[in-house]
Amino acid sequence: MPLLMPVWRKTRETLEIYWVLVRITVPIAILTELLSRMGAIEAVAPVFAPVMNLIGLPPELGLAWLTGMLVGIWGAVPLVFTLVPVSSLSVADVTVFSALILFAHGLPIEQKIIEKAGPGVIATTLLRIGGGLLYAFLLHHFLEVTGWLSAPVNPVWTAMGATPDWADYFWGLGETMLSMLVILLVLSFGLEILRLTGVLALMMKALSPVLRLAGIRGEAEHLTAIGLFLGISYGAGLLIREAQSGAISPRQVFLSCVFMGFAHSVIEDTIVVMSLGADVYGVLVGRLVFAIVATAAIAALLHRLSDKVFFARMFRPQGT
Image (cartoon, rainbow, N blue to C red):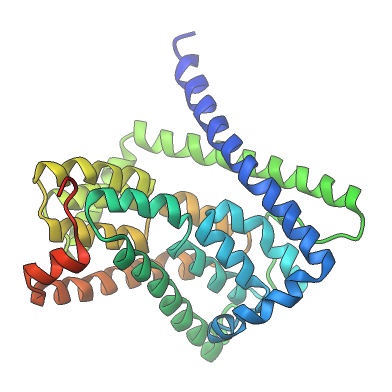
């Protein structure tokens, strides 16, 4: 019985998270389907066309991108194949779109957590959105020039497609939500196993030299690694305490939050988008390389920035 208690606790925690996602995802999915059938998606799509054209994606996916930024990855994922048929997307398309939402998703919640640690919400939000667009732009043109990943996408998990019959649609929605629950449970217990076996700690330790390349030093390395593997809620959440105690310098806190904005929760989020057909090199390896290089560049700029400008524009210690 004692062995079953941790299992039940983890299951209950996952179910609580799942219920929150259901309350967000289902209404948005139904509303999106309704708007799609009314022709509203086609009417709104041109608004996103300029940005989507830059990264070679159908303008309809702009709505899924916006939903992802406001709600989170699980809000965007069920919309992808509703807005655009699977048959019209390549592996490159799904990889580029996945990279876009991996950089900037759930901004209202995640950026509030980051703000509590001290970094300015406007600066870090713009960096996440801008970084995502820049990486998606570079990735799209690289894939276009090389022809790599040009094959039609073949997703492991096909979140709902639009159907002419409402009964079929709701059946598909139910299957999608069930698949989401299975994926969440597998990820939740998988991460817990990595933590209990010490593998996660070893991964964090091995990452330390890489983070130093990005300009992140000292205790900030460990907290950034936590955010990288487990998410902003964990990494930036711990940074709040350290920032308030003065154990980590404001500039290191800022760089840590910037890096986590570019790359966080890499195990869970990567598996989710790979189930849609995204390529691991584009959504994980390339994204990590970009995060390191971009954060290092920002670290060099911060080094030249005066304290007056930094604390006025980029960082506001909590309680001041």
